[in-house]
Length: 211
Image 1 (tube, rainbow, N blue to C red):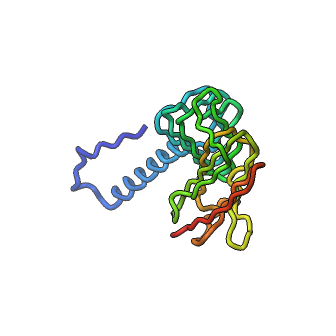
Image 2 (cartoon, helix red, strand yellow):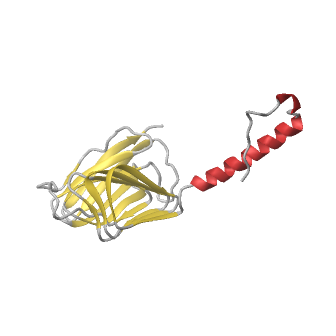
Image 3 (spheres, rainbow, N blue to C red):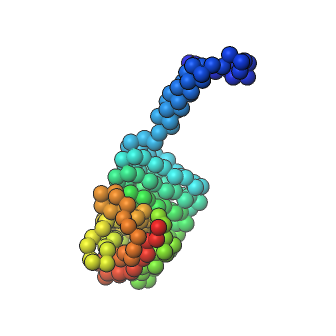
């Protein structure tokens, strides 16, 4: 391990060559430090209870479960470059909050024994914030467990990205769109449409991305 003590360094002999060598050494050490703290490619979380505010990031994927519980005091966010997989046993207790930023999110469920608020009817709220840059949240309520698909379209009706497709438990859910398309590329400013589809209906709303 290289240790540099600059407090005893005599600036009178600090030549141009010495400055170049020291700068190069510092640059190499900084690069090593960056690699040491770089986010993992694939993150797997199992057998834990999450409380408080926490954010987990991975460059490719995050897999959570089995036996992962977001407690009623938890506010947890996942940020993955490609996909998030929530396995059986991933539970969001009543009062807990979960959000994910990625291309694909699969398999969210809530704790059947927790005091989850269940809407009487299928509801979809206006995204917030709106207008937004770069992310916005879409909140919706399911009166019963069912298949859900959430899709973003442009004004021409062309699909930009599928935010979620799968079965979800009864209750209120929130999903985040980060302003990217299905390949992860950032889309341009403009008006977009999000559609939340279930067996009980389809709700479409507009949102504005400003940059």
